[in-house]
Length: 405
Ligand code: HGY
Ligand code: MN
Ligand code: MN
Image (cartoon, rainbow, N blue to C red; front, side):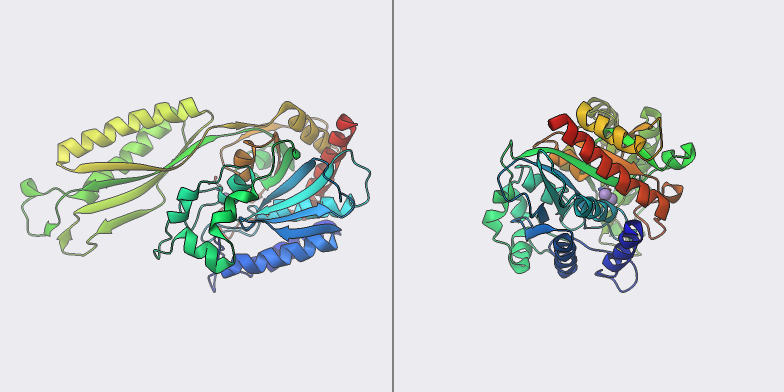
């Protein structure tokens, strides 16, 4: 029953999009406001007191936990990338609500809360994990000056959303008020499916860094002879192919997802080209070693082509290890579903848990997704896997409760 409800609710949330066709739900938008209200109503139905925090996350705490005992947090995010599937983040929030519902009257040695984070993807303002960083005490007021593609500042967007920009930092939870954070999430990779498993234990979340890289040359008439050209787009193109070669050699996933050119005219040699680089690795040291090789090549291209190179880091996060006790709880949860030998895997995908790791110990439960597909409308999960995930997360909470008694 509850897995059916989770899938139906995911379908409902998918209808709240900035787009007519496809899913885009970014931070501090009317779409987010609508799904926040829906999630809060579902939290209340599950026996939680629900409230929006100062950073536009939605929080819920069991009604019976009307004290100041430290809480175990369950949750994930409700925002999406452009052209998203309907389960990235959303599944974790809905599974957490189901578990809280099942345990609404359970006698636990800690409070139980659910959090639906508002900006894991960083789709609108470039910086990522804004909601979870605020909750974990890492909010930076400098982010208020970030602008979205339409030039709207985060400050103005927050005000329009109904937040008080200067108060966002007060979403921070006091250290010691939280005993741990467990996040259920689709794997966004092919390994569980390849191993014929529904669930897996995350050991660590990979280190990541996002940068904007630009070359500035000379915008000139397309009749300009080759030897007089300083073509920024050709420089960027050579750089992007070099990034693929270097990152493949190093085994570091690297993605160039955005590029823009000026003046962007058919008959003008591009004088400016800017592209994004998302670089990951199992460790920050590995990530930085790969970046060092890339940076050297970017500079060589700039010199050879007579271009000016500029690099700006927009997000950086070290690897986030899951704690032994929460890994053990997730493994116990998976065993409770009949998988006697839970597999462990590194998460190359980033998650809110990376930010929450600054506040408390983290654990993650991965759920098989078809073909490992994510960040695409074809993202899908099986009902029986969702049912197993709810059972496993519930059992993980009860395992932790036994540990804390
Ligand atoms: O980028 C990621 O890995 C996550 O989906 N935000
Ligand atoms: Mn995502
Ligand atoms: Mn996600």
